[in-house]
Length: 254
Length: 134
Image 1 (cartoon, each protein chain N blue to C red):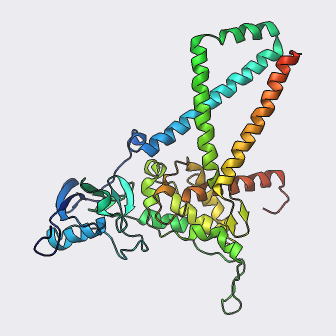
Image 2: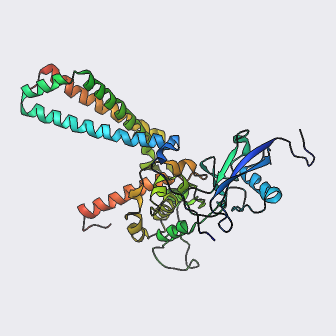
Image 3: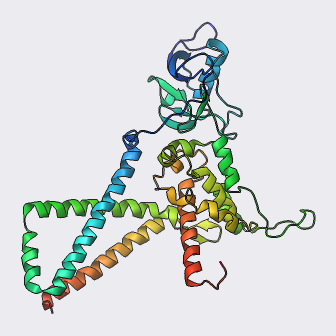
């Protein structure tokens, strides 16, 4: 059936986490009935609520195509990019939308991501070149095999779904966490980079890779198949080998 | 105006998702594997000391409780082995040029090695039994 404005008359119930710190004491869930369309994602439903039902609802989004990484939320308890979570996967059950787990909530579905940004800085998630030189002087050449070593980890879009899936981060927020370690590993594996020793103190330190118990859910929820769980285990192996080298061959090159 | 709302993960977090429960089960198997390793070492230690004590000890292993414990340890060791074999491709990265060696090859190689080592140990144990203990 088709409604007066071209929409189907079937609806789906969205239970949305609301936290309004300036007017309300405690968070609550608010129900909204939203038109059900097979081609709608959860983000479309939130936009419908914002435009037609309740303009006070706050959430982050931008590209709607799984690139910007800003619309990550808990959908029925699972971290998802809401632009990629189709309503038809849940219909006719209700859809519960909450802010990403383990992060402090600023308002409604908006989390504070300062901690994650700080962790990206801690692991120095940028290229630290072997030699400082202007790009015009000479390109930093790389073979396809060298590119393949880190390419998978470079696909991270910083959506933080992996943090919301990681119980270790939930229990111990000081843990560097999956994405930051995957990005550190991305630069450590880059043939143009020479920052491994600089990153080691954080990566192999108390809040680094050894905190990870390999639950593996970070890789399951990652929308870009970055495999942060793999990155962390590989960083553990690299760290352990470095340690053995330093003990067995203290005179050798580390 | 109130500040940010902070949620904490309670001690029952591992019951909230089937995947977390599977993780806890995998971790739990380590106790059985570790415990059985200690048991085997103590068995070897006893066998090396005096034969009579070893035989008496070995006879107590026939009690139903001990058999049940052994079966539980076997089940847990199998879960432990299989889950780690299947996790290994995340840890071991082998490359052939630009391509990674497929996870199936790494998992398969471990199973093959498992069979070979089991056959070798079986040969030593059964062979020793047939020839008679020294």
